Length: 121
Image 1 (cartoon, rainbow, N blue to C red):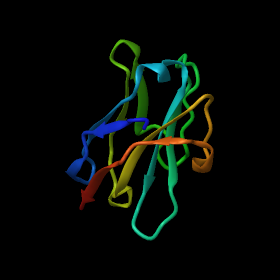
Image 2: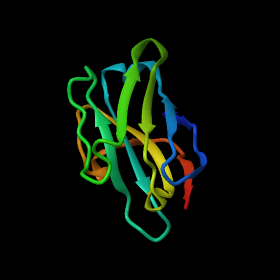
Image 3: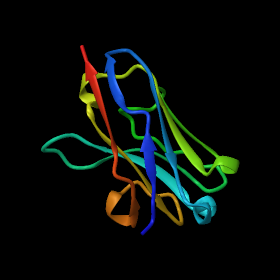
Image 4: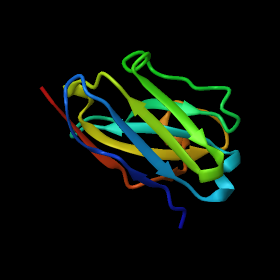
C-alpha cells in the first residue's frame, strides 16, 4: 500500500494563504508529483505538478501566479504554497505521483487521502 500523506488543510479567509505538504515514500524521489482538488459534485481538477528534477512545474490558468509547487528531496516532501485563496478553491486537495508529469488525473496511479480546504468570504 503506497502512502502519500497530506497535511496543512483548514479554514481560511478569502485572500489568505495556506501551505500544504505531502510526504511520500523514498522510492518516489524520481517520480513526478502533483496536486489535484475536487469540490463536492465536481470533477477532480488539476492544480499543479512538478517533475522529479523540479525543472517542470505546470499550472492551470485558474491558479497560475498564486500557487507554487516545490519539493524537498531530503524530506521526501512536496509542497503547495497557495496565496490569494478564493471561495471557489474550497475542495479536498490530494497529492499524487507518477513517473512523469501529467495534468490528467486518471493517469496518476498513486493517491493520498486528501486534505480539506475551506475558503470563506
